Amino acid sequence: MLVQVDDATGEVLQDVAERLHAAGARNLQVLASLGKKGRPGHVLLVDVDASLEERIALILGLDLGVWGYRVLESRHRHFDITSTRRRLRVRLPAVILEEQVGIKEIRAGERLVAVKAEHADLVRVRDAALAQGVTVGVRVIRAATETAARTSGGDEVLEVDLCEPPRAGESASS
Picture 1 (spheres, helix red, strand yellow):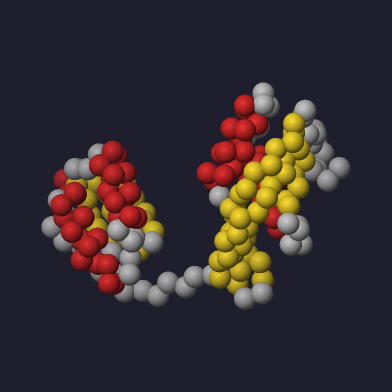
Picture 2 (cartoon, helix red, strand yellow):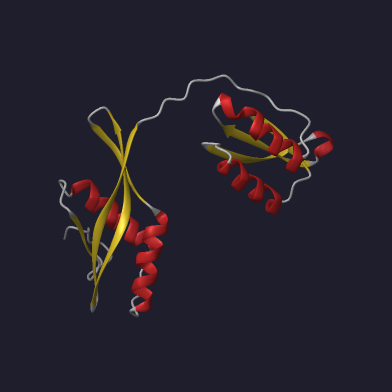
């Protein structure tokens, strides 16, 4: 669905986005736009199954005051995605943390395209490190975790060592 929206604040759009996802929207993109007479607006691209169109349209009409929308006919091809929970062991200066993390593997046939760690789980690891007096960024934990998942060979535990970050000019394998 392509939906043009006038006069909606960021707070309203965020609320509607949460409601659309809860109603079954698979994906939502909110794009800033310039409407008639130079007025700011938004364009929503809502990826939704046809069987849920009426439910989604009702939310859009009631909460955003839209008068209509466009239905875009297209094919969406998904890669094969598997989600697992893995135990992550993170070695930090003076502490070793163990947490369960969600890992998604995205494949095209047999080829591994990408590995993604669940953000909320990585935040939990970061917060556990902070509770132990160790400061480490989610970005660093994500990179190390996804690398470990990609190279683990199916090991039950993902091992990540963040004790000695590489110095300027050195690679992580040095």
